Image (tube, rainbow, N blue to C red; front, side, top):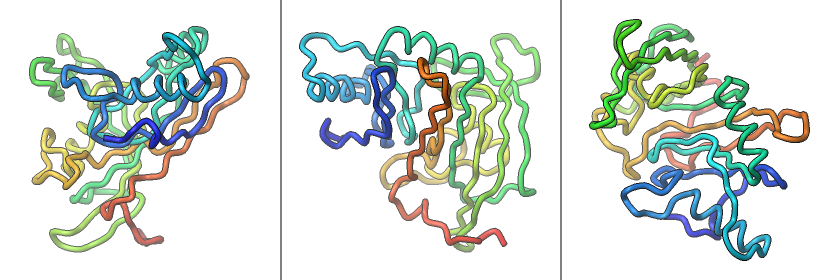
Length: 235
């Protein structure tokens, strides 16, 4: 688990803090009792800016524990309200990369699904339109690169969620018959060595809460072999 000093700061100003979340670290405190990105970020602010007492930090979105990438926190209540609204109203452009061992048919596509979450099992199912407690999910995808052959074949996907549903991209990949590497919950055949799911929040473009400009955030993919692809590998 990363120490506070190992936090990767992608952006910080008076209203926004953006961090690179490693896989395996929960975004917020949970029943495990493990350190969370929220705890580490708040401690970093307290030390970096010499703030005594309780430090405000607003949670405006989350990533699943085994997923890595850009996570944004609000440093003021004004920013928290405006960023939460931006995420809720679809004003935030989110671009994820995912690695699968099965190549989907076609170069790109769009999935419209109705998802229902089994909260007891923390599992999301695709159901028919209008099913009680279901929510519409819209995802666009395209292939970016490929590497390896046979059992070692890997395909890099770009996944763009147009809605913000729980496990949306993991279910989308599984629905393409191309479950993400390491995602045992949604059809992967084996776990990855670090227990991660090969899903990474690569880019995040969102309206800055006070500056009237778009904040463009980028988080390099993990330094693991499964994320290495030769250039021009789709040609």
